[in-house]
Length: 202
Ligand SMILES: Nc1ncnc2c1ncn2[C@@H]1O[C@H](COP(=O)(O)OP(=O)(O)OP(=O)(O)O)[C@@H](O)[C@H]1O
Ligand SMILES: O=C(O)C1=C[C@@H](O)[C@@H](O)[C@H](O)C1
Ligand SMILES: [Mg+2]
Image (cartoon, rainbow, N blue to C red; front, side, top):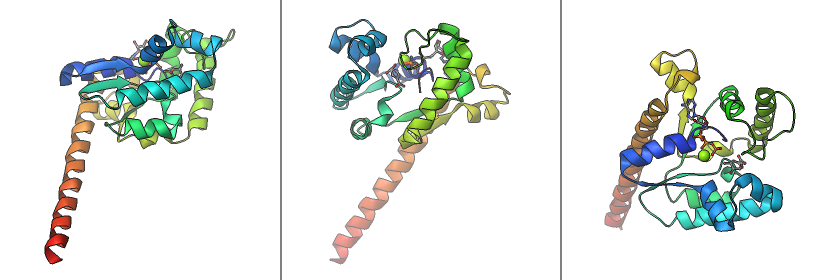
């Protein structure tokens, strides 16, 4: 979701893994030749942005050794999942209150789906984020790995997710990624084994 820390945590993961880092919103801006996502929404439309986002994700999906911070809305198109699933997907699950706090701090001008000309920035961000979260249902749960800030906070004995640093979150992401890879490899090994047993029987 917007403001969940994809760029901040993604850059740390890329550095630790020795991978390249790409921000899909930035690649869309470059592809379209406009300086901001907000301007693309304004001059063209959300649909135009989404088409470009899908084509950027398709191009990235054929590359290796990279971490991608996707746009927060990439989860709504099944075709994007087809491409994101060529790699390993991570959902940074951050409570909406924390997202709204972060976003209110920097303002909503760069986030067209949250931008409101008037009103208290926290309240406006929270209400729009709640709406988006409801519309998107469990789309984020398609990710291979879920990193819950509430779970990390409770593990580290913090009463509030705002006490977590990006490094705490990146470390937990790496643990979760490792567990997923180990489990996935074990499943693939057992499938290969039962396949070869079947061949043997035949
Ligand atoms: N663990 C954290 N604690 C507090 N603030 C954070 C944390 N991680 C990121 N932030 C801040 O929250 C804001 C959003 O972070 P970031 O830009 O990494 O999120 P994003 O998911 O990439 O957002 P966007 O939707 O704009 O792409 C930034 O101002 C960032 O400095
Ligand atoms: O959640 C969303 O729909 C969006 C998230 C941002 O990363 C941008 O891709 C854009 O502002 C839309
Ligand atoms: Mg970002």
